[in-house]
Image (tube, rainbow, N blue to C red):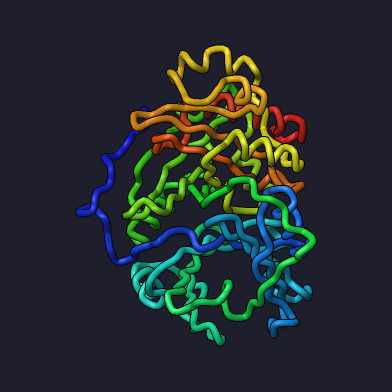
Length: 377
Ligand code: FE2
């Protein structure tokens, strides 16, 4: 089997029962939100935005919202041990809890999805303060991960009711050019990919726009399979990976073992200038996967001419791939926890709508070298 590319979505094909306006925020459950927020500010160039905790009337947790352009991350930690957030961290380590989606009507989003079989995580709640109202609801997806539906059309405050503005005039790192969430990838268990493809199709009205089998995504030693799910308007994309049999352990299997189940593998963040973004991130200590420099020997033969100079791409280890629509530049960080679980992708699209298939082999060989160093291959 080969990669299959479904025909592009058009308006008549979209399913309108769940119109999504994009990613609202990504919430991470972490062991120490104060320090994690500092890491995303100092290393990735986010700015302090809002805080919720005991001082704002929230008794069981502390949450820090940080923002860079249209990217909002929330770092949440439990304040006591007898708490579902604490249980989540005990089981999974730090990781993504909520992929929150912006909607016009969070009540309807919850009704439409639960009616189609979604398991409710949170019934619609109206959160109010002097700046208006946010309606929030949520459903479960793979593992302990959830989707929250966020309706903020009647809200003019800084983030959400329950939060207060948070800033530090003495610490405002310059941004790194990260713009918005391009896609979020989920790792699911053996033979579970198609179950979740069906879930996104039937419950959220998504379409499967791309499929990769284990021949597309394999090295000499390991393999995985992947299907890319897209919302009707294309604003939200969730590729789903499952492990495949190889001579050695798939990176997805390693993730499942250390995350203790299914979960978010990586969040891809878009930039308009990947050379500047990666230069900044490296300067601030972000660690990236490294492909061999021989990758660049035949790069232009593979992808044709590109606008960028090859020298900085090679120095920074940035990868390039081309599809029928254009090309893309991308690079993956190492995991951002001690467990080999969540990592980030930095991506700049110059027309390309795909996910870097031409780079899979070089990338996965780089991941295998890391797995081997951890004794997990
Ligand atoms: Fe990706």
